[in-house]
Image (tube, rainbow, N blue to C red; front, side, top):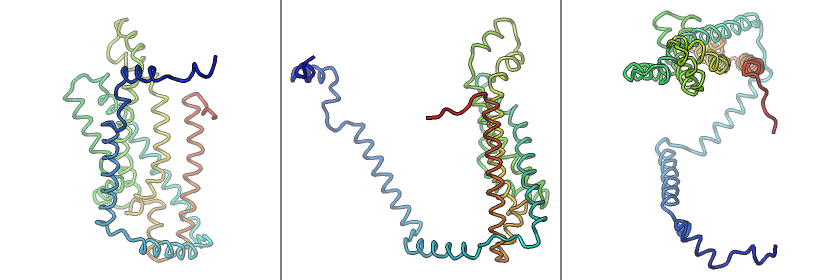
Length: 287
């Protein structure tokens, strides 16, 4: 085929523009909206930097101060408190594990009630959804402050804080997994005369349980980091010792505690990723 036949003629262009006239305009309404949004975001960012007193000079001073603190942290040294810190590490893992398990067990019924394909009552569905919004809308650190006031200092307050926030977060994820499930097994159970409980037990659960288990493992990894944060306000674990060492300016011990946290999160991430792929039943695809 010759190159001349591949080149569109003026008649071809006219016919194309007649079929798709919006291509003829150089500036479309969509372009104007996109430009307006970008200009608005840039203006909002500039106003926010002015309103919050953003200063490049203060940022440079802060970076220099950060470098100074890093030099004070080297080398990491636990001193004579290594056994105490190892005990605190186990406490942190226990807080994350028990809080995640308790949150997942409570989130399962709420996730079913929040799924539209399980609960058809709009009032009940709306109420459960808003309850989950409230539970996850309050940060774990705020829950920890509340429970430290209610039950006192210690790991129990941390477990309650992690569990309460996890109910709202996992409940939403569980409900979305149930709503995204295939309807064909459900229709098969119903056509055989199965009850609502039968459809949940034999049609929904086999589909969503691997997904729910994978989400639970991910939240255990996330909650292992959060359990350190809630410990800073008195909920036990590594966070309690971290706040104490920062207060007395023991920077080498602070760096050792931070290093323990990083190793803990790395090990949990490695193990949980292997377990997630084992539960789902497939390996990641290499590009």
